[in-house]
Length: 309
Image (cartoon, rainbow, N blue to C red):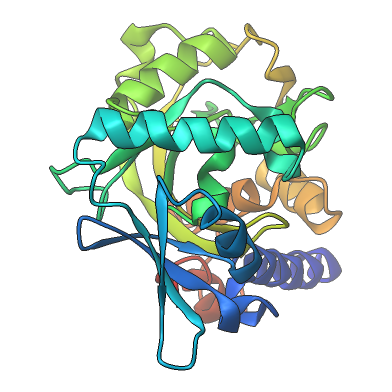
């Protein structure tokens, strides 16, 4: 067991570093902020910014004294959320048709809201989900740990296996339910919707999910930057209830104890951010302690990174 514990803990720290890979990216120094209505709305890689300013009816480049691009602004003539959203979709639709960026092949017709922060009451614009990384806009999602407590007191967790047809991380293991927060939805509304769509968990059960914190990181993606925050929820399920795949996002579910989950994480079978959510669950429920885990201090703080550092 000691070998597993050591291997699992080191793998988790490697996973955290991979999730938060932006600070060590070769593109870090050449990135520029995206400004909209004098608010920083994103962070754009230099080569992406060079492409976007070729659409001057939407994006305006701001250059320094040496001629270098210092920021990209949404042009002031686009004053409303609707105008900005339509203009951005037009640009990204054109780039998709040209095949400029692979991420746009996964066009989802699902918009994310963009503001200065998650709690900001001012929405600047909506952005097609597949284009979010091009703008380096903050993305938000929910991850739900569905678990049971057996009569013996042992805690087990329902783990989903992602469909082999998923656009991202196909075939890897995942939390019970997870999904991005779409424009206009709250975290709890997303929990209820995703629970039903992915796992056939009815609203009467899903609404019992308890918010238990967040993880955050900034990932260096091929086409851009992904600053993400995931809202974590714990949901204790009845012992006689089993999640059932519904919309094809998940191919099957497993009910596993913590040692099995640690083993699968150590073997690299988990979606990276989902492994971090499992880690936080184990710490929160006292399944990992300072007395039993030498790397406890590092594990406790490895998934709370400020965006855009």
